[in-house]
Image 1 (tube, rainbow, N blue to C red):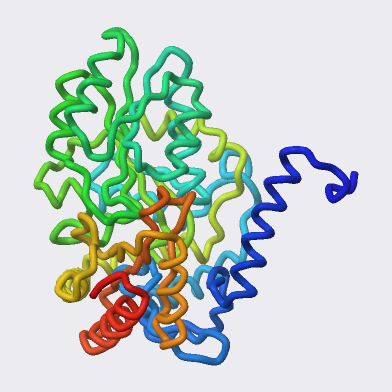
Image 2: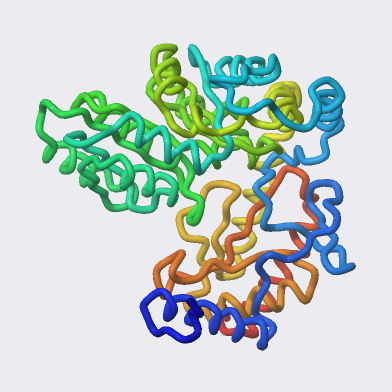
Amino acid sequence: MDIHKTDDSVTRRIRAMVDRYNYLRENDLYFYNQPVSEIRGGAKVLVNGREMGMYASYSYLGLIGHPRINAAAKAAVDKYGTGTNGVRTLAGSLKIHQELEETIAEFKHAEDAVTYTSGYATNLTVISTLMGRGDWVISDKLNHASIVDGCLMSGSEFRRFKHNDMDELEKRLQQAPADVSKLVVADAVFSMDGDVIDFPRMVELCQKYGAWLMMDEAHSVGVLGKTGRGIEEHFGMEGTVDIKMGTLSKTIPSVGGYVAGKKDLITYLRHASRAYIFSAALPPAQAAAANEAFKVILDEPWRIQNLWDNTHLFIDGLKSAGFDTMLTSTAIVPVLCGSDERAFALTRTAQHNDVFVLPVVSPAVPEGLARLRATITAAHEPDEIKRAMGVIEKAGKEIGIIH
């Protein structure tokens, strides 16, 4: 069927998206999916022949291209090749997969760990495997889409609470029948706002009401805690998270996701979660790269200090210029613009001045809360950050975001 000859809801949604895409392209406002031909030193990229400062990277500790990590990946290709024989349950696990999971478990101070092919798949499969009809899943309203999708897929009673509002979380826990299984799930660091969950209070409530606690640490590993181990270390509350989820594609410069926790939990997930049973294993090079990256984080703690020094420089500078950076206290720094149009315009000026930032607009965020979502890494030099702030400040004044 030719979709252009119909007028159903699917066709209308496609047309609306394509029309918006065409409008942005025609007005030099489309900056997504740009061709990056080189990554230079972790803080710069080559785009369409221009070197640009990279302020949209999740490589918080600047580990992309690290010689130890690259060498580990190359050695894995030489030893194992580029792929696997299939799913691990039937075709067997390579030694490098077992080593990676042991490394993750040790890093997260857990008994065991299991890896998946992506962070998205990890949240989707873990929540939907553990929870089912009659259970309750309670989620922060600003949690990542993969968490929301996992909750919906589980078939559980799905309730949300206002962002970081622990009083409302307690109300949700009180609403749940006493005899049902309850899972509270939240991002440790929120990917759009950069703020940190009220972890101590959340732990207190989970213990009070007998709920399981799952933390998505995609943006907190390598960022929070003295040694980068994440939110438990950050608050000095080791052993309080039941399900420790994370990715291998942000601070860890590879691909995949993982869950760490008690041995019985991990054994259950290996034999019950569809994304493990029916997905091929991580490619050997990616497993080896991730394995080495966790070790580099511990061996080079100066990277965490660099990240925090750079983060404070950037946030303080933008605030001094008059920008609203919301409640961020981490390397994810929203630069609030208000309307989608202002966010696109600020991005255009920044990109034309070789500052690689991207806008986040509706429906990804509510209308009126469009922003640049800038990110800082340990690889940025202070002078580079100051230049980027100068470009953003000048553009903000021209557009009327600040005065």
